[in-house]
Picture 1 (cartoon, rainbow, N blue to C red):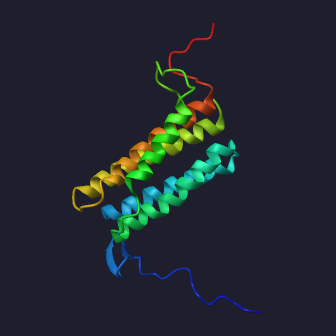
Picture 2 (picture 1 turned 180 degrees about the vertical axis):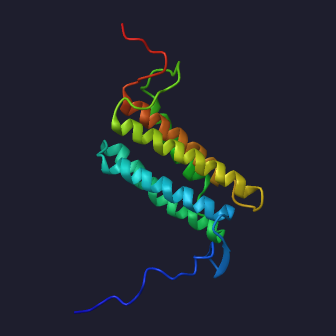
Picture 3 (picture 1 turned 90 degrees about the horizontal axis):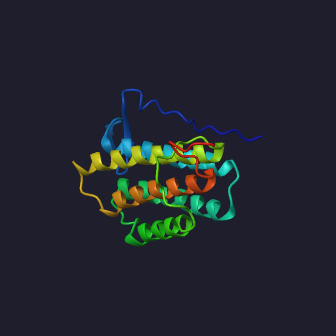
Length: 176
């Protein structure tokens, strides 16, 4: 019987620092670490959405996005140009396709019409937080402008996906 002798814990982070690419120690509240954490949380929330069961188109899109979020973090960590204008354009195409048969939005959307729509809205809010953390990072580091555009467009995509799933429960909509 083989046993795994490699421990998952190292104790090196017990003082509030962590190691990043290049074997550099940084504080755990460093703006780059904040971005990784928010993107990780976004991917996990999208995993919850996928676990709920989605239409095939949405499943395909969200799985692709989760894979792109790994590349997004790699770009933050290693300055490797992985997120391109084409990634942003792909999100825009997804938005346009899903939004094409939705009625115009005339009132604020209220999440909660159904579980899947609410989870998409939750992922959208996590995405907005990730976007804010990327903006904060940009104040101290030069990164590709496509990263902000990507998370901005991603939150828009999650919004239209939630609208499509929800059946349009909106603020101020009366039942009569």
